[in-house]
Length: 294
Image (cartoon, rainbow, N blue to C red; front, top):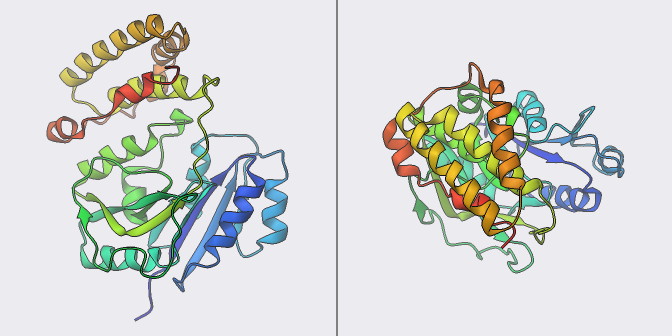
């Protein structure tokens, strides 16, 4: 029986050298039926031109502007594989990861997402046998996954909806995880399915991360939480914004909160509360949104 097609979807923006390296690493993947889709978010550093010239086997989709994570959705829509593997522009799977992933999916029809064990590429050297022997320990019923490396059933992804385009950046994995779990599927990490990530130092001077993390926290709650939990969590988020604006002497949290309320109309028709037990079990780390300037 022929092995199912796997689609790798990568989003990039002005990361020419990293994308070149990652595509070279993907060429070493041992899985035989693979398509690679690179979505370029209107890079201006020659990333798209490099992909077209140096990696002609990859399917290149060029966006007219930087759409943030919504750019991924063009790749998901174009993917033909039974399973979609999502990568950052600086992450890549270990050579044996996709074969192991397909085996797990085939063995369990209610497994919706296989979250890769994402390792730091600077400190972890993959080699045959470096990962635990199959089947590998699984962390079952997780509440989210790392966007630097995971696989999902394409039909399920289409059913629950692609990434939330309105978010632009951050919390897209948790938003997707809520919908996957609510559809009756599980999320698992298997420690023998590895992705390598070229971690970048955090830019402490940038307000981009705290702004989008904070604004999108409100939107994620309003989209997914039952009404009473949405109201109480919104009150807590407002308190956090006020407290951390004073603590860190930064107005970014207040501006992000204002943007959430001002532009919340973009969620019209998108609210679909998930089961209460899913929210109660999630333990979403909202505090990470407010730790940027400490």
